[in-house]
Image 1: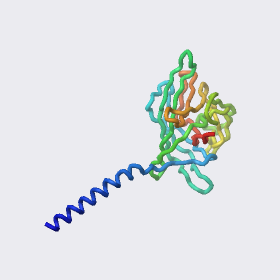
Image 2 (image 1 turned 135 degrees about the horizontal axis):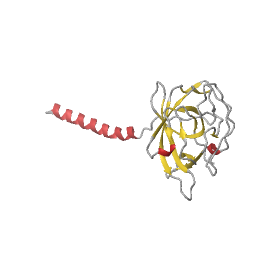
Image 3 (image 1 turned 90 degrees about the vertical axis):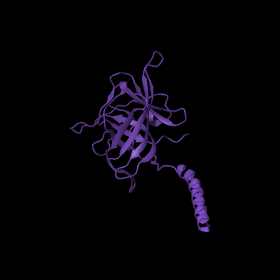
Image 4 (image 1 turned 135 degrees about the vertical axis):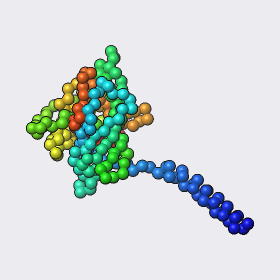
Length: 218
């Protein structure tokens, strides 16, 4: 009988410890990818996106084209995947001549690593370099009335791997009828806004994108 009581006490203590441990486990934050202000992720879309067909909830994926490093520290290896989703679609109307598409990039699948959460904005877009390696693009467009530098006039600084883009690029280059902006979602989180002025705009597979962390609030 005494042995039975001891077992019951042991089980009771174990249950109490488990109940106390579960909330602390749930509160443990997921690993997060944070980028220094001068570091950007240049990647390419893994599939084509017809912007006129976008719907809230659609997923987007881009793949890094170079190792991402800060000094000698490896942040992401080439071939890592960054995941995003469509969070807003506002169709053009008499009061709003452009269709507004909101995009959030919030997950990372590092090559040979555990998944990470993140919060990244699109800062620049450009076509995939052609086979000739020609990267002489000189014009870009940002969306006026924006909340950060993602909307500045386009600048292209050639990157590695024959890319049109680098960490200093801004705006949309070489893709007509498309501009970049940003705004806050209802919860205050940053959202990239693509302003589309023609129903025929598509982001082809291989389109280049520069992703960076939102600028700190001033």
